[in-house]
Image (cartoon, rainbow, N blue to C red; front, side):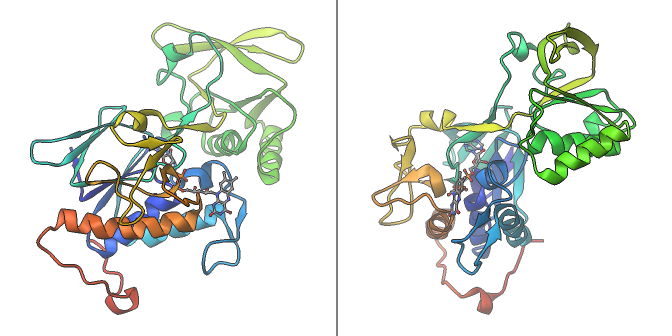
Length: 337
Ligand SMILES: Cc1cc2nc3c(=O)[nH]c(=O)nc-3n(C[C@H](O)[C@H](O)[C@H](O)COP(=O)(O)OP(=O)(O)OC[C@H]3O[C@@H](n4cnc5c(N)ncnc54)[C@H](O)[C@@H]3O)c2cc1C
């Protein structure tokens, strides 16, 4: 059981800023996200896009904003459970919330703050009939521990940043060549990454197959072979250790629908006159996931909501303590050891 003062569901910009605001009040947070990277929509959808409406930054790239938020939260040493979806919320006999992930990991806290954005990001899966048989048995949709794939025969499918970035990383760190399979000749990835891939193809570190796709999977308990169709419709079987179909992620509200929360238009209804608490006392919803009259799905609105939510969270966690707001210039940033 992982214990903290506040469980935060969603490691997007609003979840990260919640860690900071909670930390100022000496509240320890644990953050859960269904994907293995931190940053929510900013990292998943538009890391290189400039943002112009963050106070104090005339312009900042989405990926840089996430790096800054991580740095800002780091003195408060948040715990992270990444690559696991928060699936169930129950209450224990001592009035704590227990949040369980789809992989069975349990987390306990007095307060839950949901900053789940558009819902949990789920991998876009290729349409292959026996795909589920090999999930986590040779087929992986994200990379938590790159060491697992070093010096192994790895096929990566996809033409976006994630597919190319991992192909480059593994090709540069593995003694085995990496196989990159893409349905088209055009890539959606950053131009520098495309050039780097072609450089590694020249060096014999990446075997690039364009206009090709993996169409079926074979093996027993584990994936052993894939069938690849090339541009001339010729199908060839190849042996491998891992297949990483990296086609990006799409959001789904998913399990949040079943937690007894009041839902309106695919979002969680909160009390915006007070503290962004939901209809369940002790569960708050901040950022894109919530709704109330006049709601705007903007990062800075989520930051404001998180700041007010943790004020009420403090009172729930410390019913006998009074918190007096001080400016950070006066109190400083006293992180956790
Ligand atoms: C193309 C584009 C451009 C944009 N430009 C701007 C802009 O210029 N300025 C601006 O202010 N806003 C902009 N936005 C909106 C902005 O991205 C959102 O307001 C912001 O991402 C909301 O942050 P969040 O932390 O609430 O949610 P998100 O960033 O969506 O993060 C939510 C996280 O929660 C996780 N999650 C959800 N459910 C679960 C679960 N059950 N278990 C585990 N994890 C879960 C998800 O996987 C995700 O990582 C833009 C959006 C898009 C798509």
